[in-house]
Amino acid sequence: MTAIISIRNLTKTYASGFRALDDIDLEIRRGEIFALLGPNGSGKTTLISIVCGIVNATSGSVTVDGHDIVEDFREARARIGLVPQELSTDAFESVWATVRFSRGLYGKSPDPAHLEKVLRDLSLWDKRDSKIMALSGGMKRRVLIAKALAHEPRILFLDEPTAGVDVELRHDMWALVRALREDGVTIILTTHYIEEAEEMADRIGVIHQGRLVVVEDKVALMRKLGKKQLALTLKEPLPAIPSSLAALPLELSDDGTTLVYTFDVQQGERTGIASLLRQLAEHGIDFKDLNSSESSLEDIFVSLVRGERQGAAA
Ligand code: ADP
Ligand code: MG
Image (cartoon, rainbow, N blue to C red; front, side, top):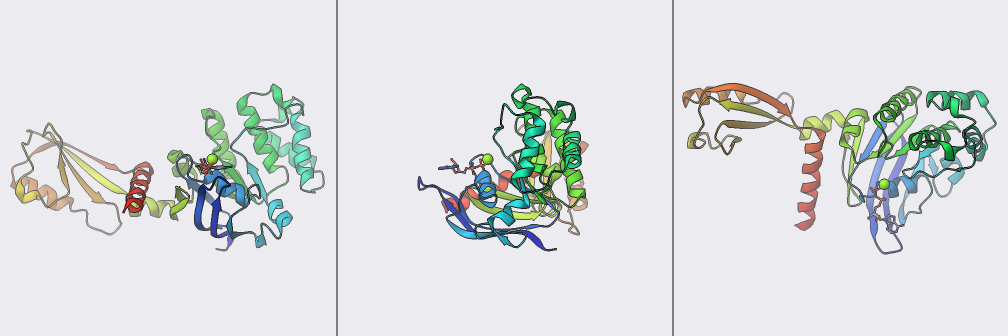
C-alpha cells in the first residue's frame, strides 16, 4: 500500500526554545484510519498543524499525495480537511454561508448538492439558515466538520474530535468517520482517549514528549504487547506462594485468597495454564473460581509511556 502522507525527520522547536517534536518519521497509508495517541502536551496538535501548513517545521519534510507542503502548499492543502481542536467559527454567518465559503476558499466550483449531503450527514440541514452563534456547542462542532468536508478532501484530520462532546455526537462522529473511510478518505485523528483509538483505528501511533514511541497495526499492537491474566479464587487462603512455584509468573493477593497468573497473548505460544493447574493440584491448592482478562490498550499505553520515561532517565 502506498503512503498518502510521508513525514521525514520532522522536528519542531518553538520560539520559546521548547522542542515539541523530535525527529518524527511517519507514513500514513492511503485509506486508513490512523490514531495518534498521546497525553496532553505530547505534540499531537503541533504535528497536525505542520502537515496542514498552520505551523512551520524547524527541520524535516512532509509530502501529501506527493506534494511537498512547503513548495507545493496549495496542492497539498487542497487535499486536506482539518477539524481543529479549538472551537472557532464565524459567529455571525449562517451555517450554509460558512460551509459554502469554505468550499470556495479552495477554488472549488459551487456544488450545492454536495454541501446538502454533508449537512444532512451531520444532522445540520435543518439548521442551515441559523447563525452559528445561536447553535449549541455540539452543533458548532458539527459545523467545523462540515466546513472541513466542504471541499471534498481526500484526507481528513480530526484533532481531539470527541473531547468534551456528548455521547450522541461521539457516536455520530464515529459513524461519519467510518462512512468517509468507505468512500476512500484517509483519516488521521488525535486523541488522548484510548477507547477512541481502540474503537476506530486501523493503526495507532503513540506519541510521548514529542517522540513517536511506537507505530503499529492496532490488532498487532494489542497482541504483541498485550498480556492475559488468569485469576484463581482459592478455596483456602494461602499464606505464601510455595517456593517450588516461585519461578512462575504468579502473584498472591494480600489476603491470600486470589492467585493471579500473567502470560503473553502472543499467538501460537503456550500459555502454560495446563502445567500451572497440574502443579497447583500437586500442592493441594484448590480453587473455586477462575477468571481471565486481557490487558486493554490502556494498560499497553501506560506501560509504553512508563518504559519511555525510564529509557529517558537511563
Ligand atoms: P497536544 O496536542 O498533544 O496536547 P501540542 O502539540 O498542543 O500537544 O503541544 C506540545 C507542546 O508544545 C506542549 O508542551 C505545548 O505547551 C507546547 N507548545 C504548543 N504550542 C506552542 C507555542 N506556540 N509556543 C511554545 N510552546 C508551544
Ligand atoms: Mg492538542
